[in-house]
Image (spheres, helix red, strand yellow):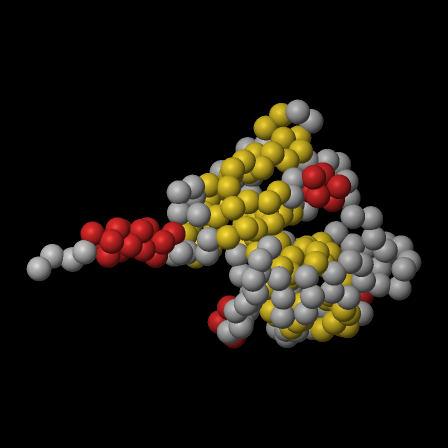
Length: 238
């Protein structure tokens, strides 16, 4: 005896519903211009999706997932890191002299104090926001840590391609960040999107770089001292 027609129709409706509920991999693209001309390197653009409905569970950061922002040759490498809220960033000193990493502006405020070559420090970023990172000794050193309250984030590659994996269906707020784009411009690029299995692209983000620089003093609110020559004792020790 065959199955009733009503049961077959319900079964046919149920199968697509299961398919739609599966997480999907999304793609986005960013294009950057400067003074009206396209910039070849479209990396360093952070894209993240914050759910507008339901409860967002930010995964626990395991020790192997802690990113490192290395101090080397008086630079932070890499100069941009993204972590989920509650995540840590490690700041190892690989230079043959002291550093003093601090952030006294928006985002996480901290001061790691002086620490020598071969040692390291950690910072926990316990709230969402943009943290501008500096060294109290070397004015040219700067970096950014972006803490997001969502597990769905990625950084663009040099071609401006962004891939966000395992995003469940639903409504999201898409936001972006780039260190060389004015905050007010970034705010205008925020958009709401709907994620489903029929469209895996969240579109193109067009950014215009500006000549803005994060003007900063040292952690005491004063101008930096004149740099010492490399052979000066003050260069190796505070």
